[in-house]
Amino acid sequence: MEEKRHDAAPPATRFATADSTASEPTSTHHCAGSPLRLEIKEHKKAMNMLQQEYEEKIARLEVEVKACLHKEETYESTTMEQDCEFDIGHLKRFTFRELQIATGNFSQKNILGQGGFGIVYKGCLTNKMLVAVKRLKDHNYTGEMQFQTEVEMIGLAVHRNLLRLYGFCMTPDERLLVYLYMPNGSVADRLRVVEIENMYLQI
Image 1 (tube, one colour):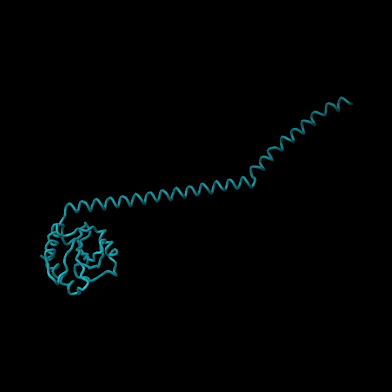
Image 2 (cartoon, rainbow, N blue to C red):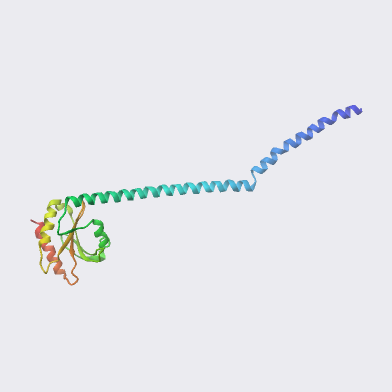
């Protein structure tokens, strides 16, 4: 009887060992779902989302910068080509951008008057000189050479009651004439300018 009890002891020991081994996965599973690990996981997820959003913003910014640079290069290239093709020595040639700035982007509050061929704006150049800028309504009425001839003829017209032509601007889409501003000039003075322009434009 004593020998039988001695033989039964090892299975009991093995059973206890099996219980301790089986309990380990339960403990590991509990650690994997702990609040700390869940918080770390959520933090990493949030960081990934922020990084993705940041990269998207950088990509959009790069596209906008490239578009602006391309537009500026195209504008400068076009202006240089036009300057080579069309130059009148005694008159100043302005870029369209210069006249935009001078007139506050052709603001309505700077309108001095208007006629059948365009609107006259008051402008201030970068050197503080005041000018009257006439923006012609339809640039399709004349080609480059005809416009050059008309500008030369208007520039030669000198009279104390007429505004003096100071410069011009010509782009594929715009025709503008720049006169010296007369603070004491009347509307009649500007109408005389319109009349003489119309006379030359109808030739």
